[in-house]
Length: 96
Image (cartoon, rainbow, N blue to C red; front, side, top):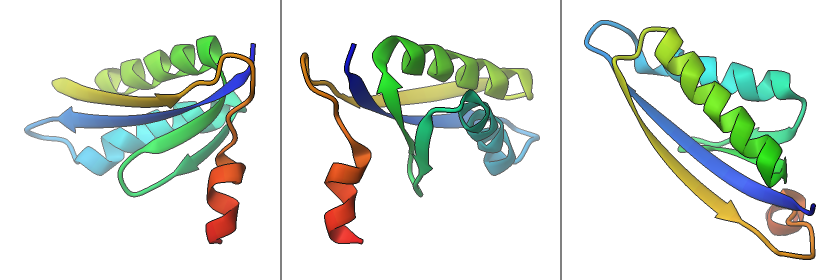
C-alpha cells in the first residue's frame, strides 16, 4: 500500500477549556504514533499508509474528547495515488 498525505484539522469546542491545549492532545497522539508528520498553523499533515493514518486520526479525535472537549469539528484532506507514494518533502522542499 503506498503512502498518502493526510491533513487533519480538529477544532474543539469547550466553554471552559483552552482550545490550543485540547489540540495539543491530538498532536501528542500523532507524535507518539511514529509516522512522519508536520504541524502547521491550520492543520497537522501526516505521511504513511492510509489505514494507519485513519486509525491515528481516530485516536487523535478521541484524545481531544477525552481531554474534555464538549464537541469537535474534524476536517480531513488527503492526497492519494493508487500505485505511487505521496511525499510531503516532494511538495515542500522546493520552497524551503
